Image (tube, rainbow, N blue to C red; front, top):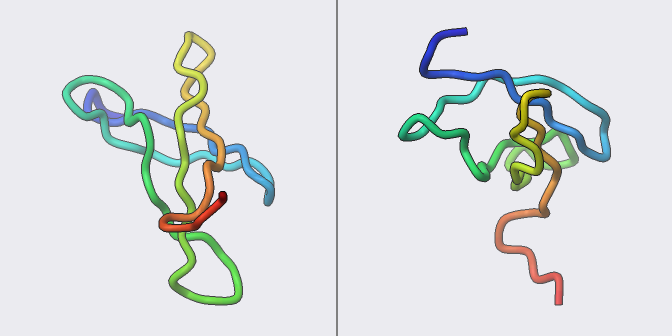
Length: 70
C-alpha cells in the first residue's frame, strides 16, 4: 500500500471483501460505484463510507445507481 492508496473493507449482502482505493485530496473516498456479480455483466452498486476511524475504512452497500427507491 502506498501513501496514495488505502485498504477498504466492503460489507454487503454477499459478504465482506477488501479492496485498494485511492485517496482523493488526501482523504478517503466518501462513496464510489463498483461492478457487482449478478445476472447481468453491467450491474453496479454504490458503496458509501460508514467508518473511517483507526480500525480502518468500512463501506456499506447504498443501492444501485439510478434506482428509484421511493
